[in-house]
Picture 1 (cartoon, rainbow, N blue to C red):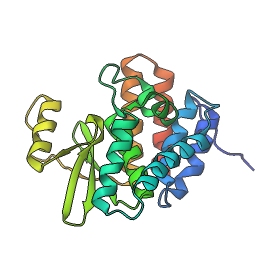
Picture 2 (picture 1 turned 180 degrees about the vertical axis):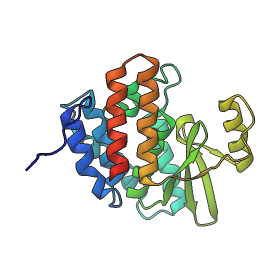
Picture 3 (picture 1 turned 135 degrees about the horizontal axis):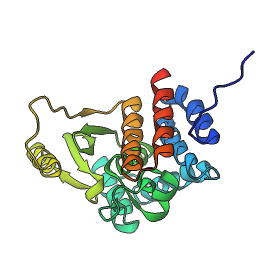
Length: 228
């Protein structure tokens, strides 16, 4: 009987952990755990339990300060903890650095990409009882927060700035450097779509750096994701 498929390019620890996480994407924290395993390709000894502990620690800071308060007050405290006390924000200086996609380094540097900072935001929000969802948009990634009086769009890459729909379109066009195509979609991200975009980002970063083995490794993870 043949054993498990061995990757040609991806670090075996990463490939195995990513594959093991995929059946649990629908569980609370499942998407974060799967996304965190991607770092094992470059950092095979990364402590993934520490990633979850640190995110839980951020949530605990919010919960401690927000005891008995309304959701709107909890949301304000969430922003204070993430963007003022811990200074999470987008890495505009070395945007293509693969470390911006690895949660072990994001939690250390407090810098990341729109998509990874959005996942960090959504995970902490979920743990403090704030319904939040990733918004997959052209050339950017945002968060949609369910408030009692409507929906709020947040940009974790820009220190949690709140945006109207018009401001979202303007920001996307500025990022793209051209008008949005007529068929452009801004929709809530699925767990599979979220992971696929993280991996595509890494494929692009490795390709631009001519790190072809690493680029192929991310392709192997994408194939595993699609097969699941």
